[in-house]
Length: 260
Length: 67
Image (cartoon, rainbow over all chains, first blue to last red; front, side):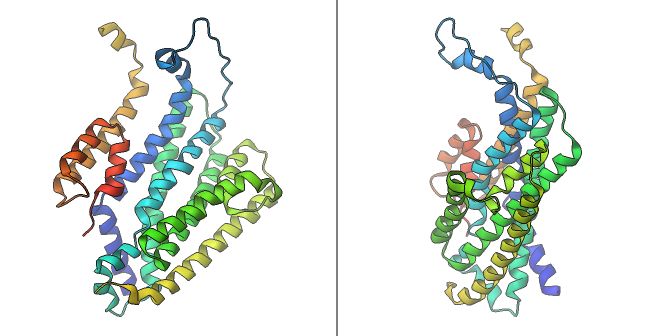
């Protein structure tokens, strides 16, 4: 276990020195702020830059606090995931390409421990990030619109966190299996095309990891079929663990890909 | 002009501006410290300063050269 703590320290130091603990949470906070603010000031924004014709009238929908949280989660789902995947997809493959991995692989380290240390640091970064994002979104929603129930809010938060764990596991597995370019393409394909497919033909099934962020919001609305929720959550966690084991194995198998 | 400025709800807008500003400062500090970037350094300075937060994100994702 000594090796594991050392590797964990190395990963934390690396993430800290490349400012990942600071800038990714700040980006999520900005994304979380933007939706409640733009929706609240929509009329002013349209008047200022909209080029509206004289006498134009528009009926604004009456937004509930949950709707704004859903809009913020929608922002996290596009730009947020893009940032997380793009900044973490090189974690293993870039080390191999730059030759830094050689320095580590010649030592008697456990590949499982190395993979786990990377996974733990990434999940810590994303936990802090969505904490900042949710806090910003909830703060503005409470100030401008209305309050949330704390219990369902926490449930929604942890549901979204388990979805992010799935995203990180897929990203790391791709990074362990392929070179950086291929890994980026594959991770984007699984996460984003998966979402699109789920949005188009997802009505035919109710259990899938890509539905988890929507289910988190439905928990707050109180319209969730609980058996579907628990099945989706457990399947997501199972796939996460499978991806992690495949990742550790392929990392060991591809150790010879490293540049010397 | 001053009246218009006073009408802006600063309590609501200020956190947004502060967060953007911090992000810009972090990107600039990192740019000052880093040895080499992808593309000319001066280009990144302008991108970070003049595009609100997209420039900083782009810098952290593609601008930093890991050696």
